[in-house]
Image 1 (cartoon, rainbow, N blue to C red):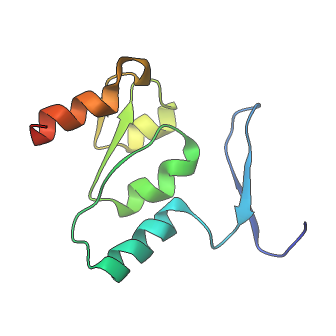
Image 2 (image 1 turned 30 degrees about the horizontal axis):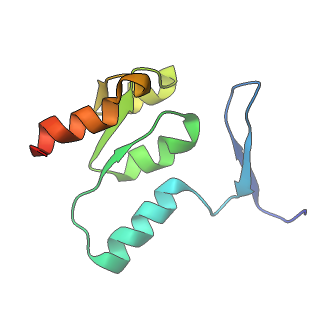
Length: 96
């Protein structure tokens, strides 16, 4: 299917995200914040398609296996996904 306004993300040879230029994780977060009146957003991401979400979120965390660009954009780098980095972070941060 072809349409105008195509955007793509990713610099890895094995993966390419193709989507409408108005569609992004950041746009979805912005919309949900507006619709739900959410004041703070904490997000997790590991790949280039998460950059727009990191720009909108108040805090953004990347597992240690994330791309270098994502780790550089993150508030902090947490544990590897194989070691349940997100779950461990949530348990420690929010005393779950």
